[in-house]
Length: 368
Image 1: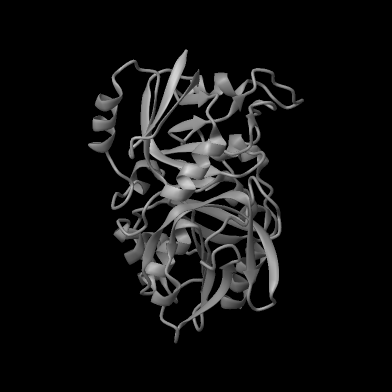
Image 2: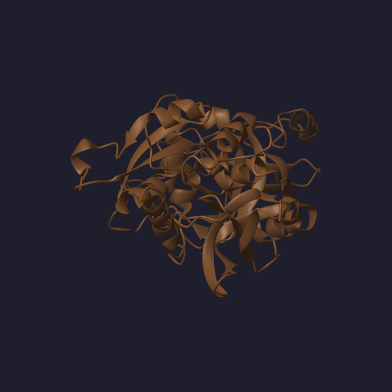
């Protein structure tokens, strides 16, 4: 069956449908990772986004039961050059096509993703629509332009957990040593790999909804606070910014991705939207204290403006070597730090796993 990808600027691409049938809107972004499409699809940070994979063939190793980053697919749609109908991997239990159908996610293949990526790079990420409908182009464009937008909209509330829960989810998999550090996780769209990394570094985890009051979090008596990744524009998530501002200095705080942006806003900074965002597993970042370079996994469309942070209280720790944007900072006197990229690296290199160790050390020193 034929399918179309339509962009809000009027550009459109024709291809073949795979996955579910129908029409789905979202912000169109490109991801440069060579592998990891299963982790990308299930990353809540991709909620309300149509993901373009620049790697030309996708689906050849299928889908397995271990590499999920959440309980379902969050990407709104999937765009590839060539969808592989052949699955070859010892862990695979279903094809990508079946997986998308199972969660009613629309995909389109046989699109010139090189041309599409160049268009997004030149003109910026924008709203788009994948459709298998035969409706006229102008009617679809009008619906797209009148639909929901990403900027200024709080989409964290659409994907955060409804109730508190402990990690791991499987009671039998818990390995409890003599004593674990208690970490309260604010769920703005947290990935399972982040929770796994914290747990493997000796943390007992309780995950809280994004709008949980700081008083309720402190009632659990955590040793530290973790601010998770998540989708969309951080500025409308004012309740989270207020909570973090209240928690500053009361417990050590570590933020990743959207959590980094929310911490930046709580410290008086401002956020801006990038032209086409950082989405991939090979972004070079420099750790300024040592000048070491890390190759990082990234997925974000917004950044904290470096110049907006108060220089007397905030120290810049990491910068992006591609475009010079802010990738990490810490408070000079309070135990609070964050990074814009993903040190849990799923998918991606493991260069930045030391940050989880740093968080553990901060909690130990704070409570010594």
